[in-house]
Image 1: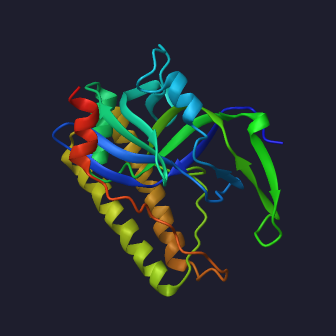
Image 2: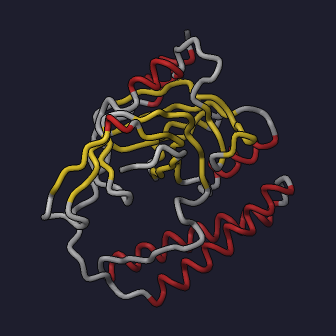
Length: 249
């Protein structure tokens, strides 16, 4: 049985960044895939939360736009939260606080790459599905959760204990190149000198983590396990249409 504590899940799909308007378009959650917790979240799982605390609700406790799931670190507000075929799609407006400015710089430099939701399970909306063909012998089918916030995160879950799995030599090389570019971005941000003390500390910690991941990747052997192809969003994204829909009212 799933616990009814505060839970988080991470996604790494950033669709678009509008630097002039300080807005970002992201996916906060994906539907119909088995995640690392053995959960499959179905379309409609967020509908009640969006109705009660979403952008167009009258609630004074709307779904928050945070950094690192920290309620003391709001960095903006959500202009749009909606479910589509792929997952929970969100458009966020960054504020003008020092925290929001730091997040804005991290978005531009590619340091923020992931987003995560803070939520609670709804016990009578969870069903265990036996499936011996998959690892773990089955999965939890989730048809509703209580969504409280969506966070920009520098790292995904378990950020200080990375598990390095590479499917092939080509995958290993591609990931080494990606991590190398991320290291370059962090170094560029550090040498610019344009950051607050908090952001400077976060950049240093990020650099240490990336260096560690690079070392682990450099010695990793391809993981001998059959993987399914990663599904990417198939909808054609029109940034102007989405932003205009929610900002020109």
